[in-house]
Length: 324
Image (cartoon, rainbow, N blue to C red; front, side, top):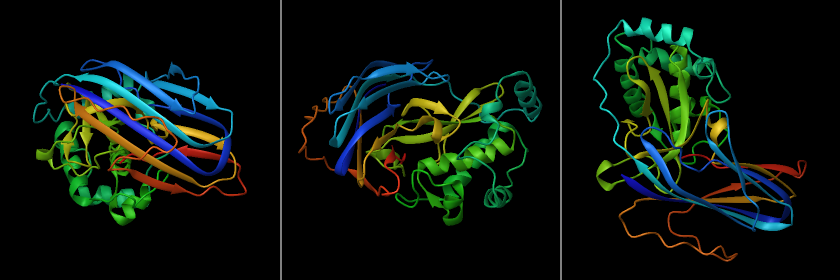
């Protein structure tokens, strides 16, 4: 399947800011079942964009805007091919728990087993694990499938119920959140079971017949668990799915802190309004017309906006976008 992806991010400032520096992780990965056939990143105000690969193979674009500006617009466009994955078995053998331990003993998986910034144990997480009977039993694949479904039913999908930097206890207390929260909670659960688990940032192609809970018009997040015999298995607890041909990967990491679509700072004293719009369409559909990078651009329907207040005590402000 081929997809056209267009991811637009706009930061509007209540007063001119300067010295903006930004990292962007929006380029789809090239790997076994996915190929990024083309990618373009456009920035306004016009800036020189450079790129490098981090230690996990994610492509990171970065740029700086030294002059004063009241708006920053970032548009990423990609053409991606995603091939069907091999069908997973319904279950593994119970002895594969021993094989998993052997794999993690001889392999370099400590970063996907250790707690991380957003995925760490807490009293509420232990209570959730007890309610799910999240202990090593049956076989590894059956258990992660079961926990994926349990997360889907135990938590409500609720945009704006958490923030981009919310710890998992916020979602655990309210039993609601967005895909970023679902992924972090389940990552923390699986790591407590000594299953290597990583966060995946990317996009989901929404189709009417699928009735996905996650928000169309935003980036998406899920997780991958390393299991014997089958390798890294993608799990989407937000939608009670295995990650398959509709899931498009842009970056992998320990949690959101490693792979946020945008991460940057600016110097100034201003309030910030963040607007994000994502379109994922089959490549054989009519192409989406490119929008002009004008200062008075009208934002399309489906805009997601967030207000960020910049404290007058801190002139260097961070800029990120939550994954929905």
